[in-house]
Image (tube, rainbow, N blue to C red; front, top):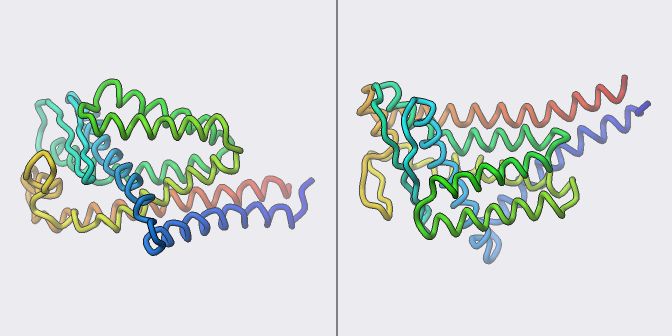
Amino acid sequence: MATKSDSTSLVSRQGWLLILASLITIALYFIPYGRYVIYPLMLFSTFAHEMGHGLTAILMGGQFVDFKMWSDGSGVARHLGSYGAVSRALISAGGLTGPALLGAAFFGLSRTGFVRLGLYLISAVAAFSLAFFVRNAFGVFFVVVFVMICLAFAKMAPEAAVRFFLVFLGMQLSVTVFSRGDYLFMEYAETSGGRMPSDVMQISDAIGGPYWLWGAMVGLLSIGVLVAGLWVFLRGGREEASAKES
């Protein structure tokens, strides 16, 4: 039978894990060479964004053709299909909310007893995208490195380190909701593939309304998703603690 002290310690560990991930994230923006760590994490948010477009297109009955990402952090996903206005808007929104949804999933996964299995699953999904969708050299390089890092953590790192890795990735995806939030209020996007209407402008074109209003709504939705993920993460520790007390 666990003591009340043991239960409190479990809840505290969840909280401290989140605090540590937050402090490291903040520090990276201020310490020398921190940008070299931030850079691949920013690319990871691009990967989540473009996959969000492609997977939503599949859910809407379309075909995810391919996606490309470049070293400047820009990317583009191509898809084909006969979509209605709402479907086109949802596909555009799918990319914008992709990082937040994946971040929330990481928070939820990190509080389970299957963190190692979860990381293998993430590696498998990334490898699947590499085989079928990633179609430029830089994108291939990035996804290969990401898969190798995930597999190394899943196979060799202690469970506590795997759990922290998931929380840390979730935190990075959370930060991009704000650090790249200006994109939500842009009419056009400049990518290495050329100039094109931004995602919020495409939502506006599909179902009407000003693009900046859709940007604000998508931003609030992303924040809500992240808050829900954090709530699940912290609540999980409390539920485990309660179970150990009984």
